Image (cartoon, rainbow, N blue to C red; front, top):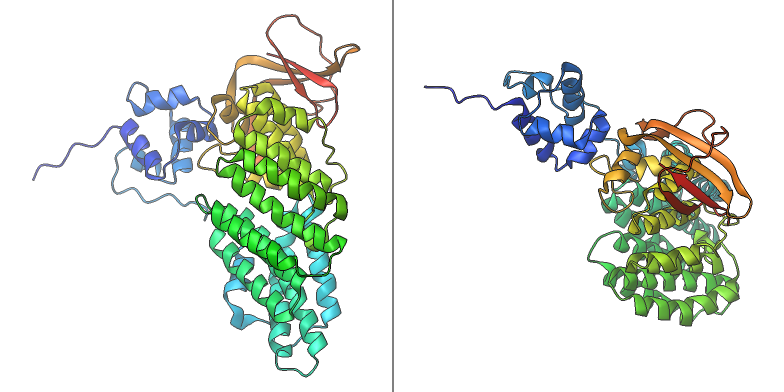
Length: 464
């Protein structure tokens, strides 16, 4: 029997890349080559060097011999996919390992509140949370189980409240690591715990959590809106207070996001004005049950509505009026920066996108690392060519990008240079030391891009 001819290396590279559904720009960037060069390799017009071939094999998870047509080549040893804390997942799924000895309820309350503070404020919140959560899950579930048949009804209700708060944190954590299945599971556990505790405010907060899980799944926006509307209706029967207004406002924002993503921006704007804004005035800036509701969060959602509708100009105008520095949640500050970067991406303002990505990397490096998928540049909602160069190691077309911070009237105050390319290692953007502190001469060549540096009104002039 005649053996079939071996496929050329380029075709094997293309087959391995398509097997995982990965775009050329992402694979090329992670291997430090241009998209055009990878395209020519796959079409057989270029032969990759040994170094490039090794990088491609490592990134595609195959042996070098496989890309050379050797069917007997042993599969490459690749690291398991990072799921964001196997110990957390194990603690959630293996409930039989829950602690058999109940912990003091006040101690559990302090530990859950500390975990929430870490999750909302730490730049390394994933790493720190993954160290805290497994033991906390086992202790909380073991205590709930031990007190379920106890005689102290007050203590039983309090530990159920603690469990509901913990599950709310886990809903956010699981959603951020891409485990929407677990996120839905813990949202349901939070609702059951809140109902068993007969706590109307926590029941509403649990439904707010459930709404966010549904918003994370394309096509389920209206389900999220129904959950939030029903919860708001039930909450209306509770004695009014600033805390009730805060949770009710958070539920209204779920409906706003659902309307915006459902291509009904007019409905989202109307709900913001008619429902969310009055509730924000009554609650003030708050963090009731870690919902971070208040006038600033309402303004952030107004910006998000315009960005989702494609109105970058109006979105950026709103961004100039928002100060997120006092928000208790670093995640919300990160989301604000990301929304602004997306607005600039809608305007194809690549240098401005770069500036804001650098700010995000400084604010929350782990969110920037774990947010985008390694299979493509999804940080800004698409595989835009220059975004690919920003997010992954990819040479810029020019030798230098200059970022100058200053104002129209007072001239340039600050100049930074990015020579060659911006490199990415272990999920982080690495830049030359003193990028924002090194002086450089002004030049009059190239093109100008006006953007904003952080939240300052001072514009940034970027020349390339």
